[in-house]
Image (cartoon, rainbow, N blue to C red; front, side, top):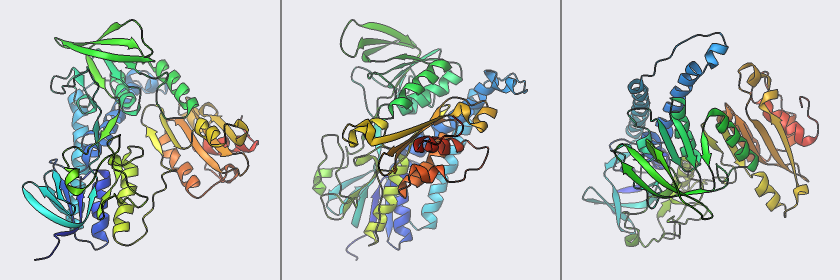
Length: 470
């Protein structure tokens, strides 16, 4: 009998875990992946990134028809919402993609251990009552919704829900209150606003989208207000009570003050996510977590215990599916004796609202701080989408592109975009930064015309002091 059942055993089949398992198998390592869900793909494919984008896309079509955007272009229609059908196409997308991962597991000879894993030792885990030993174990268990004290989520009742429950609503709420002005809350709030709900966003901070560039945060707030969203900033939720089919929230100023109440048909709790480390029995493997519940690793994704690795949402850094994927590939390659690297300074983030919001690298505030607090240490160029020919003809005038560069070297430090296809546009900026591009490099790269991406070129030209169209 062999000493080990597997060369690599991955715990969790989300974007980081399933990619790590496939890559390890491709490199000739005997690999298994433990996953307790009925389908592979983790939160992202089952109840997160993918289903939310299906609803965002469908709701954009509905609003274009119902809100007059199509009529303005000479297309007259009278839309009728079929919410069950909209949910159906969402479920079809999820089924196709999760089934595709199962196919890839079989193709690459990755064993799916069906059940939730917990450590029984430094090189062993138990899954569904059976113990497996592995030379290398990768922890890729992802994250879950952060609870809010005083606000109890019950997705089955459909009144106070988390992001999973917000995807399953059987009818459009009259009034939805979103607690948290971050990415998930704004995306799902946008879905239901487009379908007819009144949406109020309650945010503890003085502005939405924490962590993003200041100009982006301010402009996004203006755009969403123009679309009909209400915002209660610098406000905290201290309690919630379900009365019949409605919820009554208790609100207070973040800095303290008199309380007020707010009634809603649906409350979406969306204040962030926390690492999934409970239930893993990390102590039996000799592992501990930091104050944020994360597992610390070195640059190669090794934990403090030899042979145990960790990636994705359970380690420090942004909780993003594409970060987890890249870490999964790099981790598998490091285990196989190759050199797996992830440049954590160049990881783009996207908000799939309308228009989309995307950024990579440093915000202007971070760049100034890095320059010793001197604004003269950086150069900034901005270009409005209103002046972009493709955005103009597509009736997509909102937003801008912002390029931040080092004043001395001209090297690009960050790019921030508000534009309908910002999520696609940001890839060019990330690739440029990955290879140390300057703003002049981007400015002198020929861009096809007419495209939204020309706005990146124009913003870079503004950095160099040679703008053409502004």
